[in-house]
Structure formats: C-alpha cells, structure tokens
Length: 477
Image 1 (tube, rainbow, N blue to C red):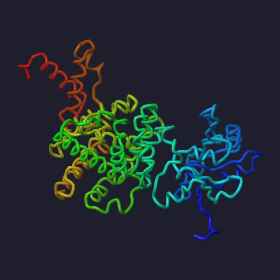
Image 2 (image 1 turned 90 degrees about the vertical axis):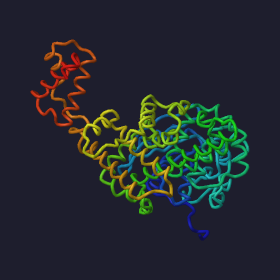
Image 3 (image 1 turned 180 degrees about the horizontal axis):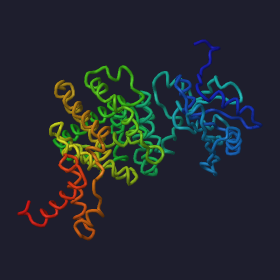
Image 4 (image 1 turned 90 degrees about the horizontal axis):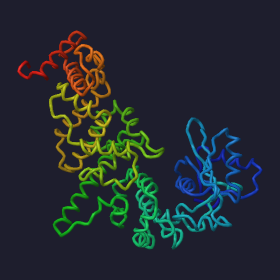
C-alpha cells in the first residue's frame, strides 16, 4: 500500500455521519474510536460506532439526534456517555458519544483495553487516516492481542474474558504479557457483576469459533470464574482423565452445534456445506431455514439470542442446567435451557406414521422440540466424528426433517389440534365440578383427534363419556 493510500475503509453510514457532525457548531475535537476503527482497518463492514469527544458528549449526541430525527439515551451522566439510535436505509444502528478518558486522545487510547481497539480517526480531519499511537495495526498484522497498559486487566478484570473472546473471534495469539495478566487477575473476575460476565460470555458463545474460545478460557483459568460447576477439579488421575474426555466431548458438541447453526444462518457460504454431513443437512433443512433462523434469533434481555443459549446448552449437556446458575439468566432462559438439556434423548424412535408419538413429543416441548432436534444432531456428529456412517446419518437427517415438517406444516392436525369440546362442554355433559379430571379427559380427547378416532363433536361426547366411565370403573374399559 502506498503512503498516499487511505489506511481506513469506511462503509455504510459512517461518511454521512462524519459530514453531519462537521456541519454542527461543535468546538471540541471528535474522534472515531474503538471497534469501528479496527473493523475499518480490516476492511470489514461497520455497523455501530463510538465517538470520543473533548467535552459535553451528551449535548453533541442530542444535536445529532435532533438532526436525524432519532432517539437519544443518556447511558452514564457522570461519565458523560449518550447513545443515539437511528435507522439508515432500513437498518438500525447506534452511535455512542463519550467524553475523552483524560485530557487528550492519547490518554483516552492508553486507557482502553487492547491495542487493536485503541486506534482512532479524526472526525474533524480525514476519517481515512489512522491514528495509532499504541501500534494496534502492527499487532493486527502480526496477529497478536496485546493489552494497552500494564494495569489494563487489573483495573477491569472483565477484559480478561474479553481477551479470550477477541482472540478467538479474530484468530489472534494472546501476547505473553497479556496472558500472564489474565492468569494473575483471573480471580478478580469475581469482582465484576454477574451481568457483565454473562454478557461478555454470551458474545463468545455467538462466535463461529466458540469452541476455540472455550478451550482457551479453560486453559487460562477463567472457566472456573464463569462456570464454577463445570470447572471443578477432579480427584485422582483416573478422574482427571475422565474429566478431560468429558471436556473434549463437550467442545465437540459445541463445535458441531455451531456448525449446524451456521448452516441455517445468513452467514452460510458454499464452504459451509462442502462436507457430506453438513451438506445433507443443508439440503434437507433448507425448506425450514427461515423459520429456524427466526427461532434461533429470538432475543432475551435485548442482546442474548436463543442460538447462543442453545450453544450454552450444548456445553452443559453432559452436566446440567444448574452449572449455569452463576450467569444471571432470566427465568425464561433458565426454563429453555433446562428443557433443551433434559429432553435431548426424547427424539421419537417410532415409525414416521406414528401420529400419537409425534403429537406427544411436540405437544410437551412446543418450540423446544426444535432445540432437542438440533442438539441431538450435533451430539451424534460429535460422538461419531470421522467414523460417521453415511446411511445412519441420512436416516437421522430424514427423521429430523419429518419431525420439523410436522411442527411447521401439520401443527393443527398433529401438534395441537383445536379441541372439538372445551372444558365447559365437558363439565356440563358430565355434571362435574372443575378439577384435574377435566384436564385429563381433554388430553385424551386431543390424542383421539390426532389419531382420527374422534372426528366430530358427537364422537367427542361419546369418547368423553366412555373415558369418564373407564376412569370410574376399570372393568368397563
């Protein structure tokens, strides 16, 4: 690259944002900083940006929001941090404005976590020119993750967890000094809030290289801080060997599940389906791809996706959901996690035409059945490895396809058919009072509708009468 060539390549809304900011009567200097600059240097698309400003960042954010007709939120009044949320060409973005961390840009950059995130561009000058006093670009070229200062991780131990995530995400080697600090201050992670630990850990689970990140997390001694139950030290050599084998199996399941999710996602490429196992899965599941993406894309707490939760389930599969007790999950996340882990063995083994078995599987699990299917496939691929038998795999993929077809295309016929009678109908017909018996009779009626034994309201009343008589007099059955 020649000296005259720009070092940064900005895409999307950033150039327009720069023009807008330069139209404002803002005296303090303003800089693009952090991950957006890193991504521009790496020629990656930029979605959200951080702006460091010499003074009154919140006021600048309000002026920009007014010009854009956007929303502005004050994130931290004391530190003068505000966020502008806006839409640009149909997509939603955010821009964070924050007062400089110190009197100068150099002080601000030294106070950041890693050199790759301590690069800047001058919004008052040329946004194409890189400002890089800590040599973050050189570290990226050498594929090294290095802390900005000797106190970077000590001052904020959550950066230790972030270091592992970034090293996996960008395939970087952690600098020896940084690695030593991670090990030394690992216990300090407990000083961080459970919510911060959870959110950073879920960012790791979102990576295509999640298994690699988890491997490093355990290697540097951070896993015991994040998931203490999962990282308990075994007693004795034999137990240690078993623990190592179990850990290897966990990572293999995580890796396979992430590959399956990638095959479903918008990140899928021709290489995704190059291997036989994923290729067959892509072909068979493609008809459900949109629905599966919506399922995995469901969001908890504004940031954590269901796909990330399912990756966590794969990691905990051989233990249990209780191992995630320290992650401050919502009640709904805990329920979904427990359901996925507890039911992974419940894939119906009966023939394709066994409507009753299919109904019982889906009616009890609802959308959780999708998780069980994907987890089961990942677990099988992880267990077989290179010993995969093509015919066996084809049979499992076909079974998964049939199951998903029932849920997405035959819901009213097999999963949850509208009942021909409701609870009030049954109460009136049998002259009963409300109680658990009514629910039991309705469950039986629903299954009879699924199998075709009952097809009309009259047949439903006859069925309820017989079932009630049977429950009260076994000899009459």
